[in-house]
Image: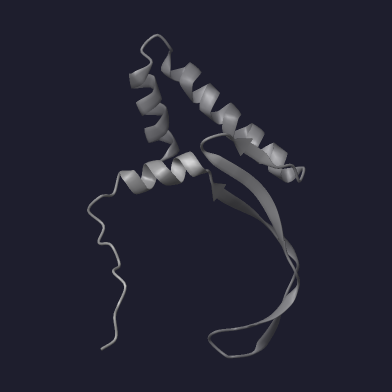
Length: 106
């Protein structure tokens, strides 16, 4: 789902709101989450999940084409951990997945 699909779906589900207002609401929410992560804060949406920033230390990487050692700087990356309710709903929506059965060796 893209941001525009999200906005269109919310606007269709809430006909009392103008499409421009729904777009402003969605953009504001994303902007606030982004700003909080930029400050190093944790964003938790109960029942959905938590956004945090993880730090990756500097390291020596490899250029896959030449095999040459390349220094990789320290960086911060956004991280999302799904909440329990989200995990349960996603798993319940996929009953067609095969279940891995334990193997018994003869």
